[in-house]
Image (cartoon, rainbow, N blue to C red; front, side, top):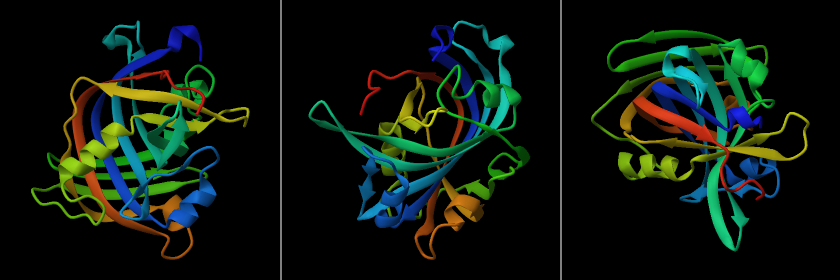
Length: 236
């Protein structure tokens, strides 16, 4: 990572976290060593993260010079051993962005290879329809904020929220194909709301063996100041 880009800052105008219950054997075949699936109630946990970012910029640049992007990431929750302890985070299988800057810079000036994609967005105050189309992947989600909570993995929306907050370190393949590189998400404000999934489709999760991936739940996060930094852990 370039020294000038050790920190990225921005604002998550909207973040949809779509959670899948995954067959642990299938997840284990996808995740490279030394990572292993993090299990909840006997299942691996996968997800699609759909983020609308504004004011995205290097940490030393003022907000008015930031860019706005739509982004999608397919991930699996993982754990690994480090210093005699078990750490948790996510392994990002693929990332897509609407803007050329993350595509060019990802894996070069900051962690995470990005591919270019086209996004279609329809939003109201409490309902979000997000579609992503790329040459190698597609996602569609129709999610609305709800007072109820339905999940077979997490008893409450707070449990789901804390699970994701604890997994703040994201690993992804290096551009040269040798190992993985990490980035850590932090925020001064973490608020998640329950989402109801009206419709969802993911080329990645739908492409797994029949029955291996089932949509479980959704979280909605809005208007969060965020930053990404190289974490203290870089060698799992």
